[in-house]
Length: 203
Image 1 (tube, rainbow, N blue to C red):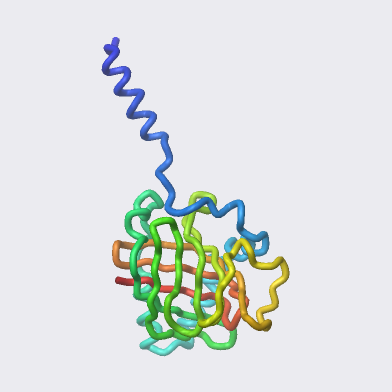
Image 2 (image 1 turned 90 degrees about the vertical axis):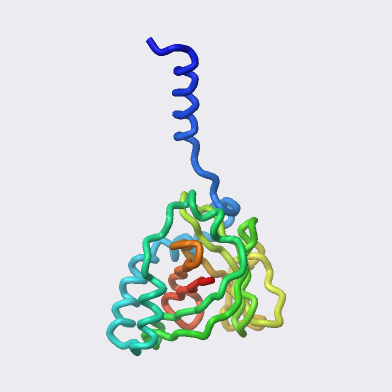
């Protein structure tokens, strides 16, 4: 029979293995809007449809940016907490909604250690939180125009008019970290302009 010390060690190892890894950012499940959860559930279908259009009609230069941004398998959730915080170069790609693929110039973004996210430059801004949603990393935030003060995602009204002034819309996306220098946020069915937004993060 194993001795007491060996038994205690085995119990400790088993307990550590069963303990879930600490998630990055807050638990987003209590605040996500029902319609935004539905949008997230369609990310794979929307990505497949819009990528077909982009591949068929996008320019070679834009497609090169898209393919490089989508390359790489996402890291497990327990590895992203130490990688996400800091300053990033972020580049928005918009697919569908009238044009197959639009690639914007790089902007500046920042991710805080508590999961706070902000797009710091460009006329279209983003501000929100990256956190855990059902075991995956997700982004919930507010899209707004530079010069405005955006309310937190949780404080947005139930009814949203994208054409209203000031323009403030809920944004939701799945966050995929590929390496210490590359990540992406896939935002299906945004309220403005496109069918899929992909924010590429590099540094």
